[in-house]
Length: 220
Image (cartoon, rainbow, N blue to C red):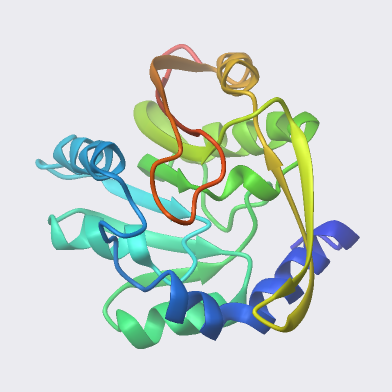
């Protein structure tokens, strides 16, 4: 994986707080963390693979989305930067396949996936680095593959945390502009099918939430 210092800080922060994360956010998709719209979009994604196809949960954390898709009969693999997070996922979902890797250097072969989901995993990627992330995603996807992204919406604001429930961290996140995300997806060879933004409505939310469905163009 990359030796980028920001990436290393993000990895170390999640390693240090993996158990706290699993305890507070959970290891399953739930109505306390995901709103009705969020869950319906995940249902929609799962339905696209009812007849087969391999999907990656990129930035899977403790396997929440991967487990959701697997329960719907989808063949899924989870990829995460943090070994601590993967260990939480393996404890909660021992049958899930998962691997260590980062979004800009996926441990996957070219054209090996039929779909991907980035459920709040691009939030630690600087806006100008999204291009490399989306190019890498395009590399591992087959033509016409489906992709779902979720992220906190904003105008590219940078937020930095130094503490998570008493544990010191160095964790930087970004509130991405949905229009910027869709432009960068298009530049990487994706056709954006839909972009939904909802207001903050759950207790843990402080900003609008964005959801983008896209499909890799056949000619890419």
